[in-house]
Length: 381
Image (tube, rainbow, N blue to C red):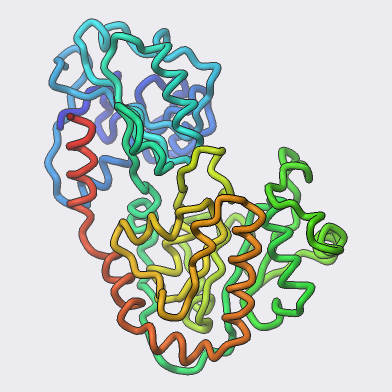
């Protein structure tokens, strides 16, 4: 594959369509993702480098229709007119425009928007929302599986059979009302004392209580418990701040080495009403570091992990919640299963799942050549 860029620097290609000015290896270079039009450096090239997959780089002046014009974006802004923003030469030379997006926005809405703007042109859109695989000229790619593997170079926590002091790990860095409701339920039952339990209570001004996808008033007193929980915070599991936990590079070993089960509170409980899933580093942390897990996320998340080759400990863990479309019912079923596991012999369950735990870690750490080649074949089809 040959990638065509607006500008090639000595060290790195400049993000296509970017308006922000910066030099590679400076703090400003890391700010592209926050600057309009949110076109950022193409870390897909780092994946190819890691796997020794060959590719070419060229500038637009020397590009032809066999090339791709990659636009890696951190945020899909529907106010952007891509027809006007993309250089005219891309259309004149019939170069394939390839959008790479590692977020979980509804790809159906994105496709409708781009089909109107880019009618008659070649484009492909790769999304981290699994619903993208069902759309023409779209593809799904679990970007965070590779990005977390690339960025987190900490030695993984290996399986061991020594008794652990904590039953579970449940960590929340960014406030969302459904996450607060989930953690408040555990807190009210006193389960927070049995795990590595943290919640950052700095409320996001963009988050309003009515955004909670859980029908909270269907559970007696849960709204009041959630407010009380937030008022009693912050809850911390270590001495590090939110900025430290935000970096993929860092791992707190004890969170994985000294507990059996991870309650994954994913980025979304419902992936923008898309009928798709959205897997992030939150899911791959316990997989890399040898833990069992229950997932609070969109329906089909467990199914998607299985399709990717991961094991989900079905002998001991009932993941039937994953098939429930209703957000509240799915959440309640997952929470009940988690609470049941916390009241079980987790040491016995953990040791009985040895083969699956070790399989997951190996799969996460092994070469991703096949995933990358499969994606590039879809793009070129």
